[in-house]
Length: 165
Image (tube, rainbow, N blue to C red; front, side, top):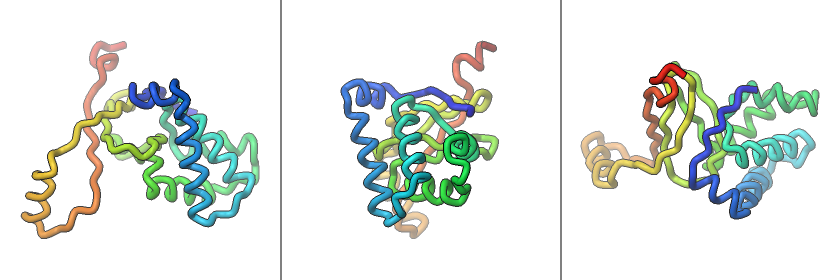
């Protein structure tokens, strides 16, 4: 499984202080609130996502599915995809888009942030930068859209890729 271990300083501090359990509770609560049956495959998905949250690793749906099938061969791809989409909509997973059109997921814990992604190695860095509310209001007024949410991804090359490492 290709996992990128680029955990933000904020998340690392949260996990070190023992608040990583908050993310685990949120994931488990999201499954319960979505009225999905508490099956062994869903428990395994939740457990693996909790591990990924602690490590800060990125993952693809297919890599996660292949990884979990080693433990639970009956895990259906559709079950995994529905679970991931439900967690994205709940704000607990981020779908990180890359410049080449691919995407990874990462457990985010529901805090507002955006991403810098490396166009060479797919390293992901979380950033707390966001546009000022006045710019969203101006865009809304200019386009006659009621803006309900947003994501911003910045593309570039990380220091290691720029230096040829």
